[in-house]
Length: 224
Image (cartoon, rainbow, N blue to C red; front, side, top):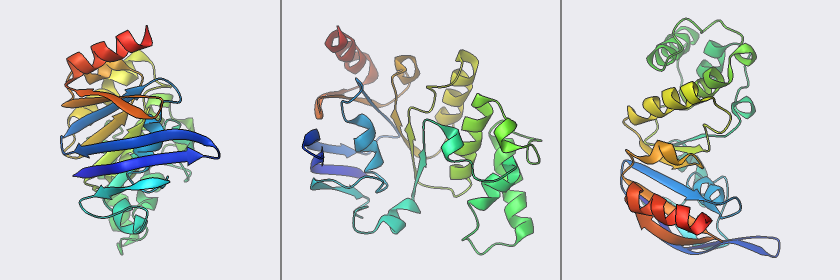
């Protein structure tokens, strides 16, 4: 359960979120809205990357602003630009790096890295230079580096923005098959048909919260 209780946030003198109250229990939830609507800021509060100016966020009762480390053990985050998350020379090393604090041997880290790469479309790429992967493969690698930790929640902030149509479809299929609760920030409305819930934000407020069909229709009308 992810809860936002009276959440507001200001950057300098500009209010980007105001009075957000949500309880997210569904398996697949999306945030949509125009640029500057506050959706990415809201998503980043789930694992403590951004702290509320007002109100609070709870992840199964734990406040990320107070105990971010505990929350980040349960919440993985995938950014728009995978290069910002890739830190090691090869794909296998990058995934294994996520396990560095798990008390595992090097061999076990390598084994688990190869296993998760294979599960999500990168079988045979463990020794491949990470920064020479295609855009779609890099985004899958960033996803694998989170999934190897087996989080309960996966937050994805516009992960398909840089992908072509084929890789968008593949990434969407991978997300659909995950056991994790997925919170997706996106402008790509075609990804949302199978989601459980879509939250529409405008000027820092929730203006619609429904199943994908009516929520997307509302957003399209709002966008003109």
